[in-house]
Image (cartoon, rainbow, N blue to C red; front, top):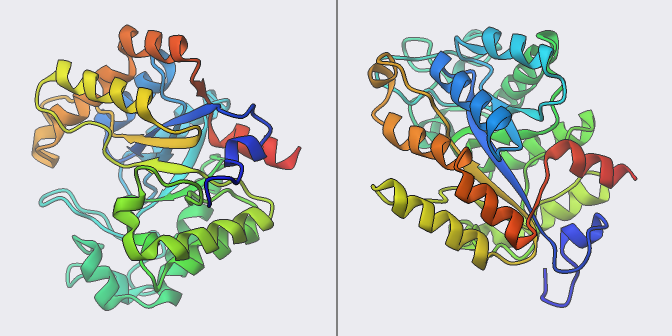
Length: 298
């Protein structure tokens, strides 16, 4: 999008200059600790949206909470990889239906490159449809679809990802605006993202201006907080989704992943009074996918 064009926030009838932010909690359903972190971030903090990893073992607990709290903005975190060493999951569709998605043990592959090397677009589509269907069967009404580890954004899969969202009328996480932060990651794929964003918009679905996949990198908490506040201060107007991973770790989580401390810090950021106060002082609008869709429909 060229500088003179309106942001997607303006297209959705927010005033010019509005910074609209979705604080999005990834990986709900992955573990009990992930569920507790997502819940705290949304109920007690500034997080406005989350998405659920349907192949994982703790989805029923998350789904039960979402049925009790239907106002929570919950999407499907389309999951085509199983990255941890000792805690693995297989495809919702079943290994016999999507053999190209699984390793010799019947689990989803550890990384995106392996999925790209082995899976066909048809298998990819069959699995993401199965994950959406499972969410709906469990009583989750997905407000959006997004992608675990970026697998859906691989060139041979991304069109299917978009088409499933359009067919089902479910917003799909896609960036088509100024790309202040995600542009560096998008690189040569930026024109493709703009084209797909236009396709989604023309189909009546909302689109993001920007995406932040790692808002803080520091080891120390106070430095993380400074990084997040600087990000919010310096971000351009438009709709920006900021991805966080919030976990309230028990001793079990360390057996899944070494990322517990970072995930706990991101939960702390979401519930930090200083962060909330800064958002209010800057006039930043907190939004979610349900509101984006309602504004797009309106």
